[in-house]
Image 1: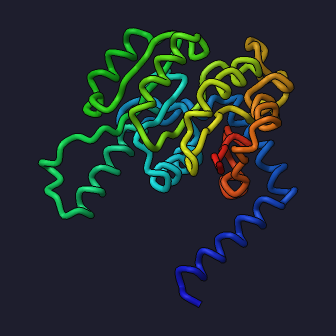
Image 2: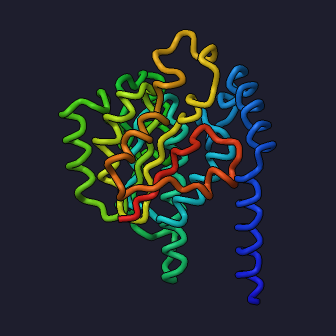
Length: 260
């Protein structure tokens, strides 16, 4: 067998084994509870901005962006802007690789249309200033307002009309109703073959005591919203292989691939 195909087969077998391990699932739950209590995700930056994501999910997003090669990434929830900068850097890398493959001078290649669009109900002044001062700011557009406000949704949909390959990342208010409203609003913008990634679905798998001062918790969170959305949207399916190989992720059941 071709060695590349052989390695791909081996990886798939490992992935399946990881995903079927009850021992692994138990260890993951225990570690995730420990990490959540200690705010583990606060420890990481991307190109100078706090990203507030687990390294495993950052790597998974890198793989998806490289595979899908989106023109537009829509993100709800901005915080310190690390995720916007991450997405912008990946889009810049896609453009650079495109230029190299075409034999163009990468230093003189015009900036493509590829960009990331972030929506947040409260873009704090110091975060906005830092994002706008970042070297990748030209690839980032921000909209302040509720992601489920009709006017904001309309604005995002209008922007998305100018792009062929769209990826969506939902990571703002984590209540069931809000996450479901975001899915209804933005998941349809996802291109066939691309992904709508719903973060913090892991809330469903954690003790209610983890969220004493939050309006969400087990039974009321992005994962329950995903389950509800999928009941009437067969054009999306959960990419289980991503869950299986990551093991540690804030988005179990949250990597939704648009299949039709």
